[in-house]
Every structure is written in structure tokens, then in C-alpha cells.
Length: 213
Image (cartoon, rainbow, N blue to C red; front, side, top):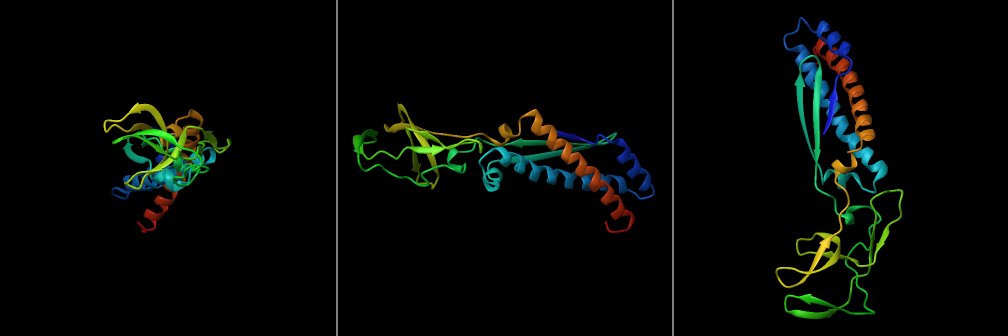
């Protein structure tokens, strides 16, 4: 969770003084400024994650949930909670092959629902999480696609599933909360967002005074 607070109480006091003759003016300005600054946080969070991790913005957006709660007392506080599951390694850039690919030069024995069977093994897969690293070779990893359309990099666990098949496990990367969890990143995001809040508050006050809101 990232908590953003209005550190400069003077900005809020100034807005209150300017809007004291307008019923509900201060609350309206605070809510609008907080909403805009939180939207900035959502965008900035994705950018921060992409600076270090080999992910597209669409992959980040598709694997996160952002909840925002505001409180107004002696200032403004926005509590922003990022949640999300771990992102499949296949969704990181550099993952290969891009689709199920088989080594037709050899066969391996696998356990299927109808017993043991010889099949061509999948070509070893590659993938990485950090932009600063090269894709790692997973000698026992392979790309598979399920009937649902989901494609991922998997490894056999050595066990058997309930249906009597070889049990496989998908190789995953990090979640968005993992990526934003360092103190350095969260503090930087909070600082940028508070600056945006104060900037937007001035704009909202001006808009209300001029009758634009």
C-alpha cells in the first residue's frame, strides 16, 4: 500500500481561505485534486515498473487492481492499494519461443491419461524478469497452450496430476505489488504524486473561483 499525504498544509489553508465564501468549494477542490493526482500515480507506477522490469504497460494493467480511499481532516490523505497476482513469465518481453515448439529430433516418455506415451519434447524455453538481464534458458521448461487459449512457460514437477498425467507447473514472474514494494520506489511515487496534488489544487481553486466548475 502507498499512502500519499498533503505534506504542505499551507497549500490546503490557502485554498480554504480563497474558497471560504463558496459553499462546498474546498471539499470539491480537494476531491478533484486528489482524484487527478491519484490518476497520475497509477500512470507513474506503471512507468516505474517498466524502467526495471521487462514488461509492457498492457501486461501490467491486465494484472493489477488499484483501490483508492480518501480522507480529509487537517489535510488530504489518499491511501492507494496495489494488488495483483504474479505475472506469467511468458508475458515478459524476451520470452521464447512465442508459441509451442517441439524438438522433432528426439522423443521422451510422458504420462498421459491413457498411460505412458512417447512424444516430441518442447524446445527449451527462455525468459527473464529484469531488463538488465538476458533471457535465461530453462532446460526443462517448455511453452504450452491450453484449450482456454492461455500460453505459458511450464516445467514438469515429477509428480502426477489427478487425471493421471504428468504434473506441470507454470513459471511465474513478479506481481505489480512486488515491483513497487521497495521503499525507494514507493517514496519516489509518493513525492511525485504530492507535487501533482498541490499543482492540481491550485488549478481547481482557480477553476471554481472563475465558475468553470
